[in-house]
Length: 290
Image 1 (cartoon, rainbow, N blue to C red):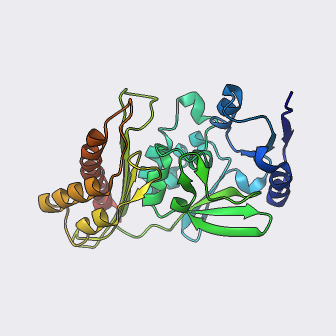
Image 2 (cartoon, rainbow, N blue to C red):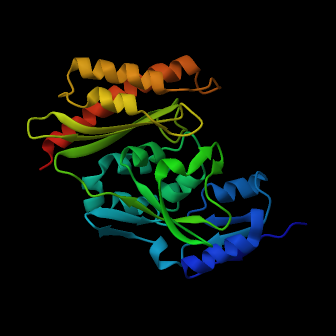
């Protein structure tokens, strides 16, 4: 019978060494809400679990260089309780708060949601729209990578053997900037996104959009950075014409499949609808910021 081993290192370097030594069966544990389910169901064979929660940098939220650093093992419940983070990045918090139930929020982490590499992960489009980056630790040392580079296919990441995400970094906020995240699900709560959209905007003093980022989830094998959708907004005050351009560009960027939760045509249409709605929310929020 295969054996399940467990280790709780106290430094990132110890964790990386353990993951490398554990081979293909080694997995980092941040919250465990996906990993433990996969182990119990037999989707993952027993191997080595490397618990990150005793590594100081992996726990907690701190402000740095005007932005925020979120430890990989920080539970979702802690994000919503952080007033400064919630005020600066409401869309990211909205997305993180959709990962599971209240009980799951006590364990689930954004880093785990990211590294599970589900196309429908709620927190990832919001992080991508925010231009968040990851601090990755591995046998070769430390490196930084954009969030959108982590997942390369459903269930697969770009992380090399022994590497793991230690921190998620959100950049400093510009004045008159805000974000929003919306998703469509068949039920009212605790379901997997059929479509998810994150929008991040910056306005000038006259209300003209000077910068934008639009990210689409669950309409491709990985999160889609919809550059044309963002360009459709820049230079506008989010009038009807800009929203129509955004809708068209978001639909054009989507490359969904049909499955039991929604057809490709439905997902494509909803991508445009949610992009318009999320942009409207983000714009209203940005207008209220100093």
